[in-house]
Length: 423
Length: 217
Image (cartoon, rainbow over all chains, first blue to last red; front, side, top):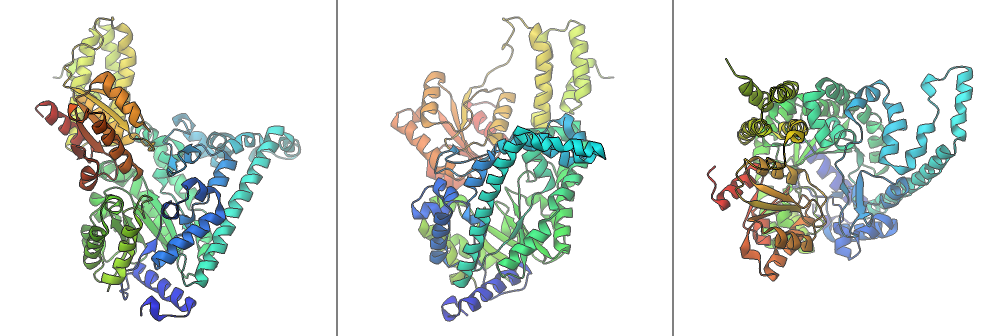
């Protein structure tokens, strides 16, 4: 039944959720679905700056609602609100530059590839990651944490030493940090509350959030946030055992709490399926060899995927770049329990290898969405829908969501294509 | 039986860091000329480049080889006199490279730079977030044979086009070849920007530069 045929918004929301969830579970549906996900396309469309979207929560909600009203996708990712500006600012967060804070007001946020933990600190990290985080790592990545290094070392304190250790809470720098962190906490709370209000408002209009949680692949966490990409790659040769041990340790730490958060988030949005988004950075073809992928990347990621799947959560993995040589290996997970979004991997080839295993998502090229005409976009989508979408198990999307610079008519052409050619 | 110099070349090419540094010291202690040691390093790096081209080596090996080379350079360079530095290698051409304005990513650009230097090109790296004016100034100062524009984000499409348009406006577009590259660059973006070619990896960049400067592969 078409969306126009359903007057009751809740029935429309249920129809959309079922279409997405069935597709993800490899059950053939009436047509290919489309899920709205972007960084700052809504801002571009509405004529406001990316900086305004990141800082003005109500504005972000308004322009995202405009985008959803226009496009009428089957669902949307609440990450697309992109309202972390005040939290980042309060934290004085250093691994990232964002619109109006190191980037032009109309340039998207970008991570800085740097070393935040030296190779000599592996043992300290492995022995007591919490202590290492509090005293070393967090003060390096965010100014608001600088005084936290004075926090008492609880694990070492016993009896009267425990009482004396309380002195740390009187430290002026510690207290200053706590103030800054409380402020950051309030900003984060405001962003999450806004997201909650927004998803409820959109649900009342029949537009469901495809929500859940976020998780990192263990190798990427080490390369992105601890050792830097160069450090992590050199460690493959110089500190192989420590790197592997840290991947195992990080895998445990990174997945802790994700299932509970994702399920709570999905429940709030009224979706029986909780999705966890996992964007990948360093495992693609050309970056590491097949052997390095098998040794350093896939085992930790696979363990994360299996744990999430066994807990009843659906991982949505964004495989950046071209991952053609990985296709055979990465199909080694339970059938119908995960979504693989591919950026540049040929989806027809992915369908041939993984079609009975995972739901595929993607991958209208950013180059086409940004610089081609609507007719070319439509033709490309039609081809994807009719080949990759055949038999179900496919969600149409941009190669890495909707590029900020895409003309409105191109995005409309992409979304309309699922209604035109999707069944 | 292999000679010490053959062992040296193999140790670098095989990522045997400890052995490579140990033999460096042995060669220095034996009074080997610094330029001879660097020449052996170059031979080793040619093997690394070939293995990268044949997809036997990937980014981790390039990073490691680069780091070993830096350490050897630190040992050898103090022994070189002013006259010997920089000599001994043919330069095929000059490549000016940078990440276009707005984009802060540099890993792809750095790998291209590394591979071009390895293959005998002089590379002037302008870094990240390079303004159109900075490109124009550097072109005027260095007269490159090739300009490389790098970008990872979709915002780079417009930034690359603006940079190329500025070359046109300045009347210098035909003075050099322009190659573009980065995560999302493809044929569509090549047409959109008006560059001469694009590459999807560092070896394609090297091959483009070889072709344009008439160097046999």
